[in-house]
Amino acid sequence: MLTIYGVYCSRASRNYWMAEELGIPFRSVPVIQARLLSDPQAPDARLNTQSPSFLAVNPMGLIPAIDDDGLVLTESLANNLYLARKHGGPLCGATLAEDGEIMGWTLWSATEVEPHTVKIVLTYDNAQEGTFAGKAVIEASSRALERPLARLEAHLAGRDYMVGGRFTVADLNLAEVLRYALSETALFERYPGVTAWIARCHARPAFEKMMAGRRREAAAA
Image 1 (tube, rainbow, N blue to C red):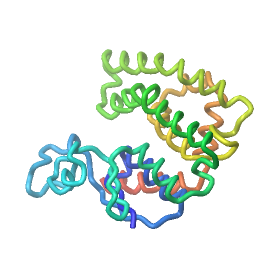
Image 2 (image 1 turned 90 degrees about the vertical axis):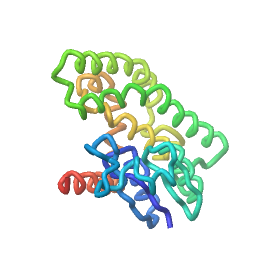
Image 3 (image 1 turned 180 degrees about the horizontal axis):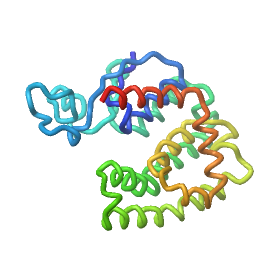
Image 4 (image 1 turned 45 degrees about the vertical axis):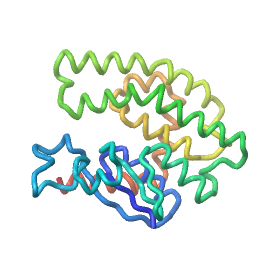
């Protein structure tokens, strides 16, 4: 059985969404980010990214990680590419060309988009948005997203999804990376095609199941 290490309120959300899309059984091990704990090394601390038992899974101390019948992978977007390829169906590439497009868009989301979206979400998480430094980070990150969003808007013209005319792992991976920046509504209003595409992705039942997991975590915190 697939095991997913990480809380839903982390990059593990990508892997939980993928597992729900595929309809496969999985076990969740809720590893929390050590930065959220006052003393992650305390004897009674929750299982976290500095816990020895988790470091035995991922020595880098980052979530998520997956263990699929003994195969351990530790990069969230690559985890999804692997799961799509393993289980097949419409989420993976139907041809070598589609495989290339899916890989290309996934790497693009990691290198050209996520460095900026993650700065936005972490600024809000650290409650710095009311400070000048926080505002400056958000504004700079939003400006940096203009070029990637313009490219994505052009690519989606006349398309409902990124690759092959259907929802694939490329859509899931990129939609999850962009979700970190959705607080910046004025930015996304300038890209109606991107906004409509995100809405289509988020209308999927598997996405709602993942978000329900996030809500349960938040309520229990």
